[in-house]
Amino acid sequence: MKENMFPGNDSPTQPLGARGLEIIAAIDIIEGKCVRLTKGDYSQKKIYNENPLEVAKEFEEAGIKRLHLVDLDGAKQGTVKNWNVLETIASGTSLIIDFSGGIKTENDVQLVFNSGAAITAVGSIAVKNKSEFLRWTVKFGKDKFLLGADVSENKIIIQGWTETTDIEIDDFIKEYLSEGVNQVFCTDVSKDGMLEGPAVSLYANLIKKFPELQLIASGGISSLTELEELKNIGCKGAIIGKALYEGKMTLKELKPYLPSYATN
Image (tube, rainbow, N blue to C red):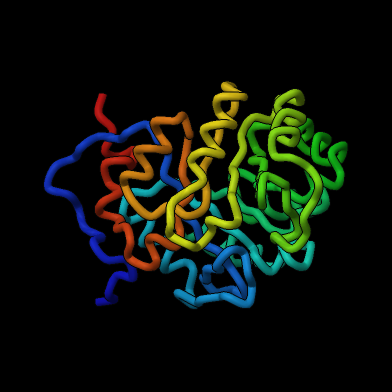
């Protein structure tokens, strides 16, 4: 019998009820393998599993419903590369998948949806070609897109975190909220992969300024205490990756947050 990759992956003795924060597991892909970076640095790559489907199935078996799948090759090269991994996971699990990385054309969007993604997550195109991105939201529906707002010192960064812009995060979000795009996931790159806590003050300020924002936190999350803090400031979801791979949090610990344990 295969040993679980994640420690503590068993059922709790008693369902405790979901706590109003959507848990989204993350799988980052380079050359078809499940990896994690540190601060978005491709030279600081750690391979966790050469079969991402195995990882996705463990998430699903634990009760997680949603997966954030990132094509890091695609993000760096500017075109979707690991769509076959998306297809494999989508056909092998019932996870709701949002997919990002290298999506630059309508054909890319169509490929991602055809390969099994429920949601397309985009960042660079929204910065470089607003009109094209908005055209996609009209054609496919705004609810089919998750806007990525990756930041370094409050400035938006793009192209797989290799290019810094002069755009302030507040201005970026304000611009798209005015267009009716309110689903956003935000990563402070200085927090990514560090397991030292998420950018709570950044998120709190954004939610206070833009109450209609549906904000998903990403980067640095490593404890249940931090999840509670994110929930309390009004985050709608939390993307968790390295903390699970490194055993800082267990799938068992996350059970109370998962929809299958919600109480009426």
